[in-house]
Every structure is written in C-alpha cells, then in structure tokens.
Length: 186
Image: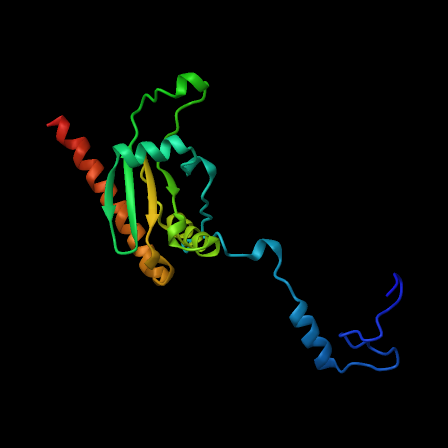
C-alpha cells in the first residue's frame, strides 16, 4: 500500500454525509468523550479537604542513607511489611561537606527486591505503599529516617489493611522515639 491511499478494508465504518445521527447517539458519544477538567481530580486530596503530597524533601534518596538505616536502625515487623527506622542526629557530618542544610523531619524510603516479583508487581507495591504513607504520614516533626520493605502478601492485602499497618508502624516509631528521648533526661 502506498502513502496517501486509503485502506479499502478499514475497521472503522465511515459516516456517510447524507445520514444523520439521532439525538441519543450524539449525546452518548459526547458522554463517552467527556473528560473531567484538570482541577477537578481528587487524586491528591486528603479526606479533610487539604492537599497532601509526597515531595522529594520527605523521601529517602541516597544509597548511603538506606544502608545506614539498615545497619544501625531498629526494626518493626507487621504482617505485610518490615519497617526499619533510625533517628537522625541534629548535627549531620555530611552537611558541612556539601554546604547544604541538614534535612529535618521524617524521611521515608521504599525497597522492593526482585524476589518479590516482576517489575509490574514491584511497582504496584511501591505505589500502594507511597499512597498509604502519603495519606497517614504523621504531622509531628520527627527527625527520623524510615525504610519500608514490603512482603509478597502486600499485593493481595486490602488497601485499608495496608493503610492501617503503615499508621500503626508510624505510631510505634513515635512511641519508641519519645520513650528514648525521655529516658536519658531522667
């Protein structure tokens, strides 16, 4: 077939110029083609009406940070994930080298190993965890690094259960860190 020639066996029937569509067919076509306006999406709106994000500043990004949390941190186990956490010191030894200010607040990272499935399954686990963290991230200013390592069961677990586990993990971390901060003062 040459360029510019139309295919004699096209799969889409052409509308002839003499035929008219009924009003219901036109409205159905408009309903199918309708798209919500850009600002009307509720994908990132909290149930309380405020937007919640998962910005770069609250993510754990560097390999060295992940390794430090794994080696020096503590663990919290649940049915579909393991949560590693490590409180950060106020004076970071890396900040003077780079000239940047040391990060403050809660930073979260996710690791999903290849043993848990193919790329599609691993990415789905990360998306579910990211959304659960985004929805229930504590507002308290904890200087702690958290790494969440899911188990295979996370794929089949209901999202409300995942949300509950992430909330419980953050509550345990807050509780243990507050105990640790209170005990040296006594």
